[in-house]
Length: 74
Image (cartoon, rainbow, N blue to C red; front, side):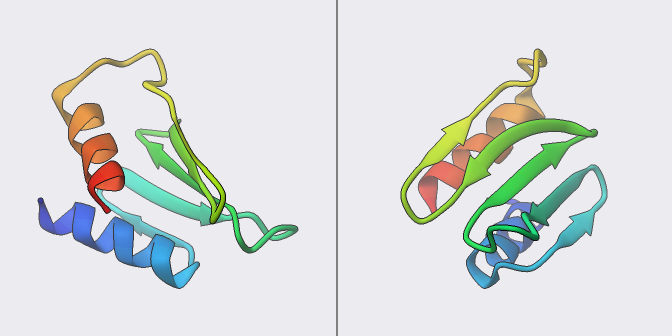
């Protein structure tokens, strides 16, 4: 797992907003349990305690796949 993906997963676990390079984690201000992950501004995942929803954002790239695999491995 890449360093940026470890940081992304840590931000999700800690439920805090985070941005690094081309990846961003945003915590929903109305529902702190829900985190949305963006890659190049495209939503690629929503994570909460009950589910993980993944999207390719229309971009089936190696980087998108790597980020999603890191989320699922977590």
